[in-house]
Image (tube, rainbow, N blue to C red; front, side, top):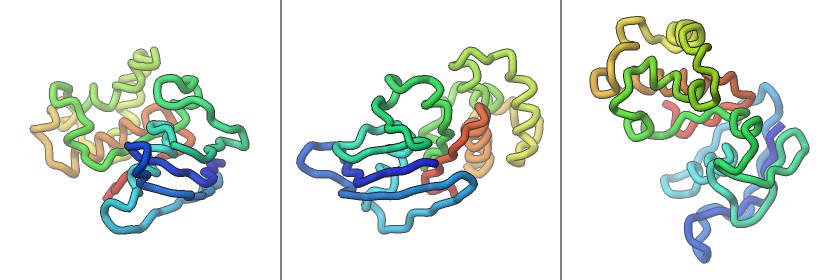
Length: 167
């Protein structure tokens, strides 16, 4: 279970984007956030995925408080989250073919030997054909690139998937 309690977060000390937000997500549950542009949905998603430290409040994973964020969080905690970012083109390295884009988290965590099997398993599951896997981001459509980014988010078998404007 993921629980956010009274989260206040922003990018400058005196101008938080979200204030006092609480949210709980149980295993198997899907939660969507709805609000106007600029209301803090992406910031809250980044806090939930341990990518942005809140100014105040508590984040609990399975009842245990999270005390470290980003690269300082233990690997087991970081890899519990898969993230699909809002803009696929900005989150994808333009130099990498889609196979390597999907495999990035495996290689970063020392599981490079799993690349062929995981890519072969995930590509059809997200709607990518083998011919697309050798192409670079500029050679595929936005939808195809978003599917590769979804596969990248799933490649480590995360317990939680955080999607920022997935559709």
